Image (cartoon, rainbow, N blue to C red; front, side, top):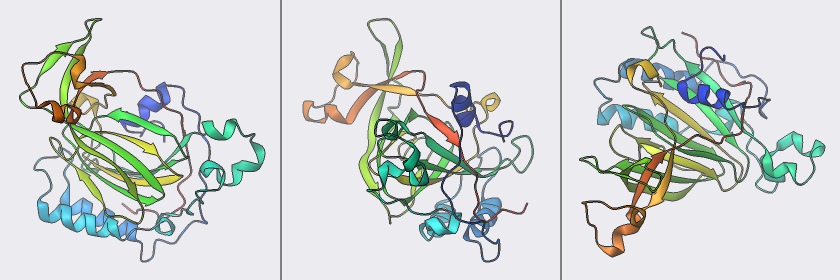
Length: 279
């Protein structure tokens, strides 16, 4: 698993991520699997290079399948928002302080070998305890489908301002101007959100409002040698730096400067026990 993880997950590993087990149901049969149906449609639609990008019709079809996915379809049990910040059966062994510092759990459903024709996508699930965060990061040249399976998640996302506008901070670190695309709480049941290489909020952060889980499909997967490296950012107010682009004062909150940073993530690997994907 560690050798096949995406660049995003490799970053987690390098930051000394601790791994554990996610709360899940008994392994499910592949028969009539919604996961298998999504995989087959993605296989017909996506390419390892991401070119050409999926058509609007293809995006709509995949989104429709994802809209019908529920926690039980991927082997999960929905967490009770009042159930110890989403810790499930771990709650009896933890004191009150440690319950606020539980890791996000990562489940890998499918990740093809990025050096073969199978490397057209990655499908994974993130299980969040309340208040846990995946910091602001990008998806270069990628299309990403996200489906909140249960709970509530705050999504904050940006797209780069084009043409590129750059500046330097007081410590001479470079920052680049971005425009806010999404800033809302998404609560299940809900539709699938889609981000694109240059629109839809390609740079986003997730913060768990309640215990929640998100199913992600990334196409093509991260691959650093092809320019698809996962980079993390910190956002600064528009007024923090100078720029040739002037915006109306009442719209300044719609813009931010983004500077690269090292991620601070607490994450563990769980065992996916939902329907398997047969290649």
